[in-house]
Length: 403
Image (tube, rainbow, N blue to C red; front, side, top):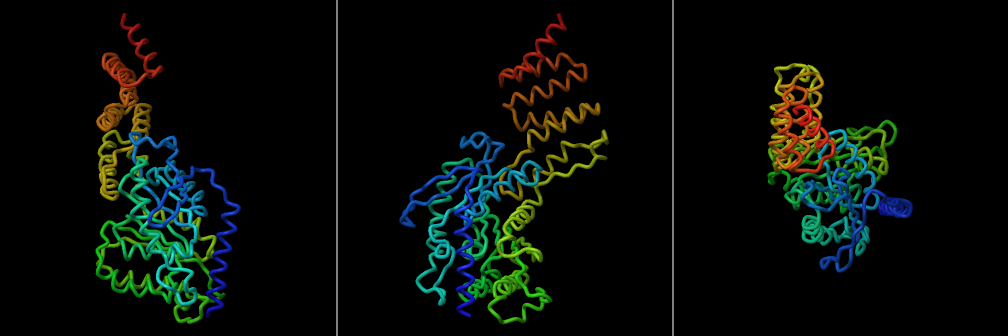
């Protein structure tokens, strides 16, 4: 048994060392912060949404944060996923913080595993650094909101589950990708039997992914009767899931998936994507063509209701996306549904009263309606808020026509 555990740990350690040597990051920037708790400087990787121009300026917007364990390995893929999902309106723009470990096995495990005495078990100190130093630093330096996600793979997944049980209010969402829940004789699974049943997880979300390391002909049902070390990881995850199912009154929102075609390393990318799709499944706005074409359908009411639900899920006010509403307004102008367009543009103005482009857009609507007086007033208002050359040209044209 010891030889199996040693081999697995060496495999995981060598996998990450090789990845760190070959995997530079090009999607953000690095920063070093001094930690009194860890007694050392710690490197972190940071990505601010492209839609914010990568700016630290807080008045341009505020964003949820994803905290990545094994950040140097997971950073690029998670940044790419969040940017793609934002572009396709599947999630809000998000800040990504990747934590670089000085000794990942030590920092991502707790207790004293008998197989690796003296080598592991500093997880509580590491998470104290995350809670008391890293998160406050990120919140005070960057444009964040209160919504936080923690994501980890392998022993990082173990840390995610340990944190869910011991500090359920530290994050809003928890993602464990093929978590090493077998560690320390599956102690975390034993703790789950009590904690999951007694804790209230209202407003919290968990996603678990399990890779396929099973022998041919073995499935997730039959493997539960196995006793060999080769299947200890997936069996520990399956036992934890059973505890989740038993504690069905704790209000934890969770999902899990067995990835038949993925192994321990490859599960990261697809698991990261599926996890974020699940966590933010409430975010996508669905508008049907029939609703767009129906002149009596209130698009503005649909938007308000949708973003009220998004706000409820996120725990703070989320206004309808200005660019989205603007685009819908112009689509309504193109189809000559002027009443719907006006409602949309007025919604944008109500939510963004200092945005000159919102007044420019409703000015375009009034031009299309032949209402030059209101168009002129709207363009003039836009120019008091922002210097927009196109708006100035449109205003001058209308003023010349009235002479």
